[in-house]
Image (cartoon, rainbow, N blue to C red; front, side, top):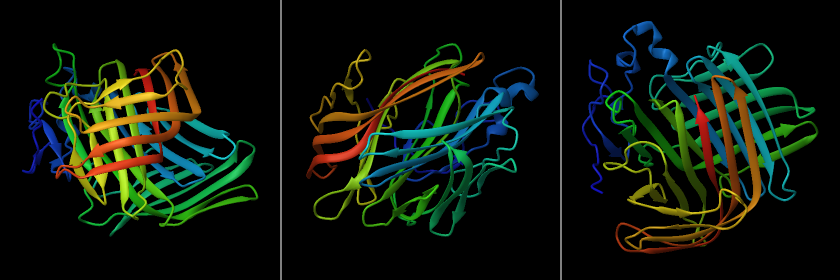
Length: 349
């Protein structure tokens, strides 16, 4: 597959609603002009098919915390979850909001804030000059009040994996698309409090990541996503972003190794896993030999939603990666117990 790296700025969409460029980039170069989407003849219906979300996650040696704001057009969601790696227990809470009432998301991933506040639950993802600030409060989260105050440092030269691809539907691929930015390995500092418990995060042992997505998807969708952010024994940060199942990836996949803030692009990754038993080890490999990993799960998080128009089922496995990945310049990176996740997701949305 020929991977096309984008370097020239442009709008995301042409005036007729088709993609101006297709490919991947190390930094965002496209202006996300979703107002140009042209999926339905009636323009006021366009927003009902546009999907937008900001998903932040923080991984330490002992805990995982995630917060999301999503606008799915005819409904929105605010949700958080907290996982204790030592006990295997996890807790989560979700608010579903008709027509995404109260959720504000920015036009682009480079500026603007994402917020929700209904007078009870509050979530805010704020841009600062060299950081992202996650703040929130969720009363009675799994029986105890939860607050979060976390800063993720983002240097200007820290590379991210950004892709823009059409969807697979041949009849509508020109106007169905996915525009996504994944940022791994952001040094994290702050804390989460849950009742009397407090979990502190420091940049030496905790890293964050962002999954920023915008697009018009097929109503029935499926994907597999694997990710990790951690440290090598020599102190360098190392991240993985791997996936398949969505869109036409002939010109851009979302597969990459992220080493010390630099993206090393991978092309095709083959997954072997059991949908009947997600707890069995997963195998991930590339035909060109640059990646050969085994992922061994130790926690299974299952999230199901059934709201008639919107249904989803996610099996998100947390575990450890072991194996080897080769950089663009030939260095072999050995992974031995890197904590991350791999998930299978089916949705009607």
